[in-house]
Amino acid sequence: MSAVAVDITQLQADPRTQVEVCQPPVRCGRLDGVRRARGAPALLLAVWVFAGSLPAFAIEMSTGVRDDGRAYWRMDAQGFQVELVQLQPNQVRAFYIARGFSAEQAESLAVTCLMQMIVRNAQPTGAQPIQLPLAHWGVHTAAGRQPLRLTGDWDTLWDAQGTAPEARLAFRWALFPVDQTFHPGDGNWGMITTGLAVGTRFDLLMQWMRGAQTETAAMRSLQCAADTR
Image (tube, rainbow, N blue to C red; front, side, top):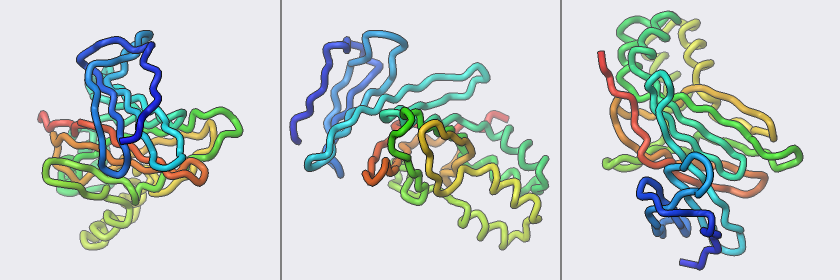
């Protein structure tokens, strides 16, 4: 693995956090027990090292619990900010029954892991736009890797079930767009569908374009909300 120049003078020991150093595509080393010396500690600070002459860039990740009891995970990759928030199965049931889905269809959605995703390009004015193609994203569990379930996958299911057009439209509008470009200051939110069962723990594998440069990262140990009814 090539050497990484990382200023750790502002870091101090804390067993709850990690620094991850990677040489894509697969070589990674992890240094445990560091955090920022100032402010609220991030639970993961990752430095990804790109091959060739591309510069290294730092990715800061943190996790916590919202006031409503839902867990969240946040990533800031030099101004590209992503937040994933649990959606509880009871929320999903109520949401889709109110939008024209049958109780059976709403139940099938409630037992599938849905996550709320909030994205923002917080780079300064004039910085490169960020393109977000969800077709290149996936989830990784102990069983292996699989892609996200995207709009086309759901359309096939709705066709087979004869789902009402107004219900399909409500579902489509609730999903995060499959491909979107974010200029500095832009943001959006919506659901992503993982295809996993409720309660599953997984890594979210991400890819985006910053201008002409492809960047990748993984948000580790996310967990789908459990069904508590």
